[in-house]
Amino acid sequence: MKLSTKGRYAVMALADIAKFDGDSPVSLRDISLRQGISLLYLEQIFSMLKKNQIVTSVRGSNGGYKLTKSPEQIKISNIFSAVQENIKTVGCKKESKKGCNGKSAKCITHNLWDELELHINEFFNKKNLSDLIKGKNENRV
Amino acid sequence: MKLSTKGRYAVMALADIAKFDGDSPVSLRDISLRQGISLLYLEQIFSMLKKNQIVTSVRGSNGGYKLTKSPEQIKISNIFSAVQENIKTVGCKKESKKGCNGKSAKCITHNLWDELELHINEFFNKKNLSDLIKGKNENRV
DNA sequence: ATATACCATACTAAAATAGTCAAGTTTATA
DNA sequence: TATAAACTTGACTATTTTAGTATGGTATAT
Ligand code: FES
Ligand code: FES
Image (tube, rainbow over all chains, first blue to last red):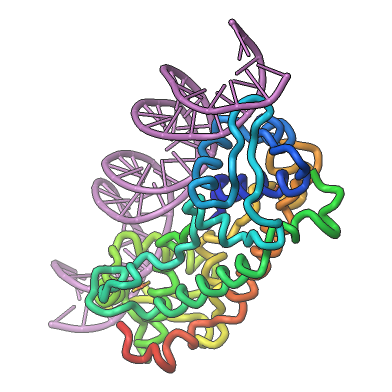
């Protein structure tokens, strides 16, 4: 089990915007250069972030992206669900009565994975963008 | 991010053994039938569980597998690391000085993923097999 | 005008996953 | 002692997911 780059890059890029935020929007080109992420890949990611109102865009020369809210208000969970990289521990559908192995009842491990999912989502709900750009992270790229 | 079947099946199968534990060992054939997991896949998984002393095997007719310890003593984290399905949130090497994007420093999100990994491992350290076979799970398959 | 930067869709190589297949060895028991 | 049940090992493969590229736009500041 590992985190996908899509989710990680989304957070990384938004943290970059939060850090270099000013009057003018931040361009994907700058983020690409600073964070070492492919520009084309960033475009794909930001398309989703925009659709989900995490960022707004300014087109044209000197354009770029801005956060829709303050970094404190943007939770990691918001970002992950925007790029559709949700934590999905259980293989079985939540609404379905069927279990993960096609049986009629939920399996013996079902509650465990459900609890884990809750646990992780709690973590992502507690953390926001501003947590990343303050304190001991200050000197990070 | 999702859990692999290998890790989930390992826990499921061991919970099955814990539940049907008696004098005689539990055969993979029985587990396969009860839990709806491919027998051949189970064999692969149990090979690893045996190598890591989670189970012992009894060969021959009427053979099978037994837990090496009581269900209370077998933590989910033990099982996951035995089948090499460890949680690995960060893309970058722990010991390396380099970041996930090839840069010389750790990236701005590094601490976050590290914390998450710790968080998840804590959960898996707290949970053991006996948690699965008691209480509200009793009526589960 | 034109360069910069966002926007959208389609495509693809590589890696990981979720198994299967083949060919054994061991041992209880009929 | 024949036989079937069950463990053991290693290689193999189809499918899916991931992590991007590629192409061809549109909008706008200068
Ligand atoms: S994980 Fe939900 S039924 Fe098995
Ligand atoms: S996750 Fe470790 S440096 Fe980016």
